[in-house]
Amino acid sequence: MSADIAVREQTTHSLLARGRALLFGMPLPERLPDRIHETIRREQEQSEILVSVIQLLAIATFAVLYTLAPKGFGADISFEPVPLTLAVYAAFTVIRLWLALTRRLPRWFVSISIVVDVTVLLITIWSFHLQYNASPSLYLKAPTLMYVFILIALRTLRFEPIMVVLTGVTASVGWLLAVVYAVTHQQPCDGMQLLMAIMGDDACNITHMFPKYTTSDEILLGAEFDKIVSMLMVTLILAIALVRARNLLIRATAEHQAAADLSRFFAPEIAGRIRATEAEIKPGDAELRNAAIIMTDLRGFTPLTEKLAPREVMALLSAYQSRVVAAISAEGGSIDKFMGDGILASFGAAIASPAPAAQAMRAADRILQDCRKWRVERKAKGLEAPAVGLAVTTGRVMFGAIGDDNRLEYTVIGEPVNIVAKLEKHTKAEGVGALSTADAYDLAMEQGYRPQMDRTKRIGRVVDGVPTPLDLIVLD
Image 1 (tube, one colour):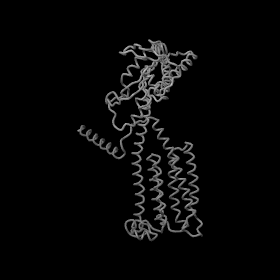
Image 2: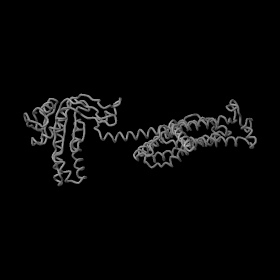
Image 3: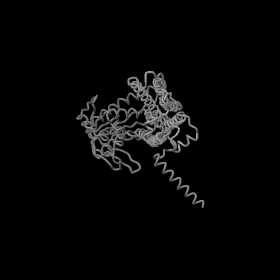
């Protein structure tokens, strides 16, 4: 028995969950990061500015029309509620706009302003029968009531469903009170007569005939009921749509923040490539490119990690990497990966380039120059200042995604990548700080690179792991 009850409860819970998902969209995570809420809050602040501006424009337009349009009442009418109402409402809206612009608009004030918006509109409509010295049923037929739907729609700009509901409910209750006032003040009518009129008799200035309603002062309760139902249904539909839209906005904001965070782990070119790819990225997707490769390394870094405190090690790495990455990015390169103190970068791989070798050589000059200054600064402060090793190669590489369906990585693969790693190590054997293959250097010259100084060429050097001797250029 208990098992059957548990199954029924689980089934009921599942159906309710599916119903909520169908009505309001997929549920959000139980807890969202504070920065997501802060992003939504900023959007709401901007929305309140927009709402206030729209209302001020509407007030100005209505004031101009009211001033220029012929009046439908005689010159002996002394009571004109519209100018006074517009003046008070304009002052209130200006205060709200100022609070919104200064980011001092509290949520409770927004709620009060919604009630004020609707109340001002309904009081204006209610006062029409006083202005025209007519029976209260007059204001029930005023087309000005349509502005209620504008007020309800304006609240959607805040992406807060409860504010839409507050507007719609306030308008519906307000109009119900207006109907009650019109019925009870139209003519003397006791409770029994009113009940009979509601049930179907024409009494108490209540009719059930539409033609009579349109051509007399009598009230058609069905018409007023339709207005209230319309307000509530529009409110309900907009509130549901807004819940779905808000959930979508929150999910989109969360995904955007996550993408922004993840993009910090990729080169901008890689992040842009991932965002722009229409088809699913699969392992093995690759392109052949003519590219240049740079590899840098900190000399003696491993012994330093044993000598320095972890915080000092990370500060050293960060300072070194920031200079190398800035130089590579400035010349249009892309960071392929960080390997401890090693940095592998490519030019013309992530994004095809007509002059990758020249870009790489200019980036090498920047790196060497910036790192020399950096070492001088650190030595002046009494800090460890390791030298930087660097190598440059060029050639045909494959650029694409490797890994499996759950974990992918964009990288460059090919002989130039293997050679640059071995060449960077070979700088120690040559007793220099930076080397380039002669082919890469010559290609850079053809592509417009102009060196800042004369470089030494070393012919037929044997590099560990490379089967044939290489002609090398000493860059530093």
